[in-house]
Amino acid sequence: MRRVAAVLGHPVEHSRSPAIHNAAYAALGIDAVYVALDVEPARFPAALEGIVALGFMGVNVTVPHKEAALRGCDEVDEVARTVGAVNTIVVDGGRRRGWNTDVHGFRRSVEEMGAAPRNAVVLGSGGAARAVVVALAQLGATTRVIARDPGRARPLLGIGASDAAPWTDEALARACAGADLVVDTTSVGLRDDPTPAPVPLDRLPDGALVASLVYHREPALLAAARARGLRTMDGAGMLLHQAARAFELMTGRQAPLEVMRAALGSSLVAGSW
Image (cartoon, rainbow, N blue to C red):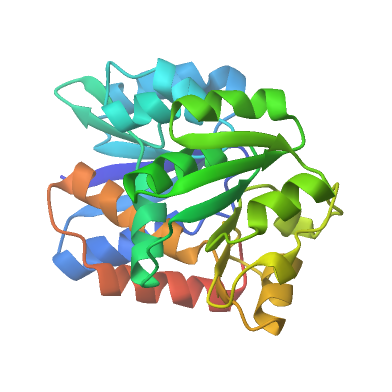
């Protein structure tokens, strides 16, 4: 019988996850289909009941449901509990087991770049920032967080960040001096909205890596970093590696990473996001 998996979000029509996972199923001869389901927040608890009743093998969870997914699981792994968010749920014997594969995804994308960050700066304090901070702690980096609301950033001090500062010229200058990695986890790159203060790329040493979690376009920050001769990394690698880990958790099979990479690349070229 064909199995079903899905990504749950609101909105979700932009998701590349169906293309990535369905390519992997086809490559390994797995009789399964992966779909995108738009679920409004008020209906999310019912949706989690439904995936068990309908025999889903699992779901991925995206904005705005990751924190609610944590509360809706019967079991949660330690990384997801530390981050405070679940993005992968495996249905196992009628129980919902929750994981956070975003941490794995970001860590692997940094490793693929050949980077070994020691002094990192994370811009933002939301759920994506939490996953990045935990990943950087796993990599052994010292991480400073710069956020519009430093109060909101303080909980990140308990999961790996060493400092949280307001988004000002002075704080950015101090944080970027000597930093070998800057990661923008905010939504600024989606539309290139103005920031409270520009990132002083001239304070970064040669060879520093500047990253964004946006994967469908080149944000202004990455364009400026590239023009200065710095290395850049978009969010495609994080998306790929979190999907590969989710695939393995749901199927028990090793992910065909290069097949999934090619499917992601094809979907990006197609231009829908």
